[in-house]
Image 1 (cartoon, helix red, strand yellow):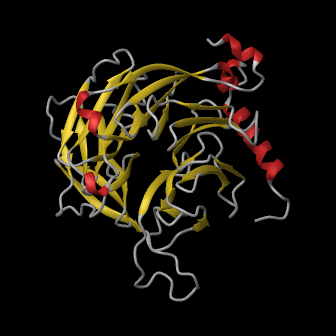
Image 2 (cartoon, one colour):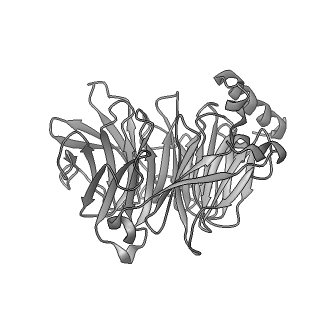
Length: 387
């Protein structure tokens, strides 16, 4: 533990623990970092390229915190890997999205380098890169299924049926017309960049687009959005529902900002300018008011809104070489550790100092307390008459 935190007021630090590198991953960018939901020490790193002109193969590496020197599993892929997600109940299943529009499922139990399932043109694979994949609860037929979002404007549900993936389009993300003329008819599809599903309301999800809008959608309405937020001036790179408070979500964008929203209001509750393009924003699993963001200037920013509403508690460079971008961030569910990935193929773990996790340290941590903390903040910034 960093004892110096006691003398720093609210400020905290990140202690670099271990770098995780693989020889094969050097020439790629890290495109996703995800901790296993059941095995706390295991995390997956996706390798691909965001550069349209530098597309080649891809790589998935599964690491354990107990062994930084070598990955436990590696899978080489024909196309760059852009996204991945562990199944919440079957920790050996990984859904993967590729640059060429395919999605696949790998089974860590099988000693095979090929996926157990992969989408094909026949099953309706995407025509553009798949920016995010997300496992869902089993469907009515008790089949495993996950969702994917792509630049082709489709959000698709993939069911694992026997030995193949079957795709169904859930929603088509259409460009919003400037006026209210024939909306939805014959309009171009917008590029989807990210999405997130509500933690308790099963049908509700958010979609971020390349034009900077965020759409609130329902699985039950494929032709229209429940709501649209004019969120950012450039592409939205991540949207995340809060882990505790049911109305709150965060978004980040290439326009340098992170915004915190109450989904019932069209304007953000908080806006933070981080001075560089923000690649990822993630809520902590232990506090409703703590979140982390990573930027293109190689920095990690950790905020705690209950301690400091305007500035991060920690803003720290985590890269060795200049001009290295930090792309992604993940919080460990049980340890005070985050994992970050950069555009040189490196992943790294860092320990949060005590000031960055006060809720856990002060033993005030209950779900009700965390929701009340966030509610109090929302009441402070909300004007009585706004909607």
